[in-house]
Image (cartoon, rainbow, N blue to C red; front, side, top):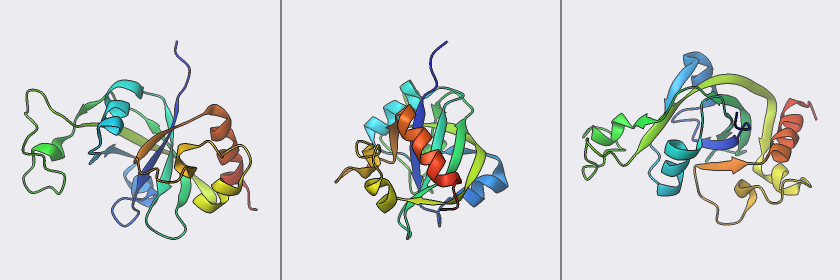
Length: 157
């Protein structure tokens, strides 16, 4: 059996936030249009992996909770929908470019673990989200980074 992998997945809360996932319980994580992120979704994530839910583009940006990957990858239906902002007319249905995973809500943290706090926390300096110029919507998280951010998020500070 392979070891658990950990991820950080960003979403703008005015588009889809953790409270939306709490309401929905399970939902598709769609709209990723970057080949590295596509490869993570399609090839590297596995059912049962855990991911931080990260709110971006709203102060404070940061980790707000945890979700679990609960489905094998499948083609992102938004790439075929001309009405979707994620429509990709060059993506053929028989060889789709973009993939999604279903995720389920696990936990909402007691507080936001802000990007500024993560940058200032020893042990998180190598975390991709803390790196200057890092713009990927999904990144890997090491087991030690996972444990540290969970401790921070569950504390009342």
